[in-house]
Length: 96
Image (cartoon, rainbow, N blue to C red):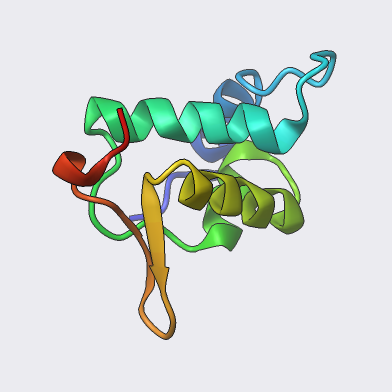
């Protein structure tokens, strides 16, 4: 279901505010931290949406999301399976 344009814009504005362009932390690190929090809270589980969709939601470049996913793989929170997508790793396999 697609949100009406005004609600979609409002949602995007809300999520974009969570990325602080004035921060000394790189955007991909900020986004990785936000997604990690969503993963650890259980809000994100199973298959992760397309990187393009995440880029649109957070108002960042596609390349930023690719770097974010690489960082989340390094952190042991997601795994990518060629031809299938990127998935949240089961909680019992998360690093401490």
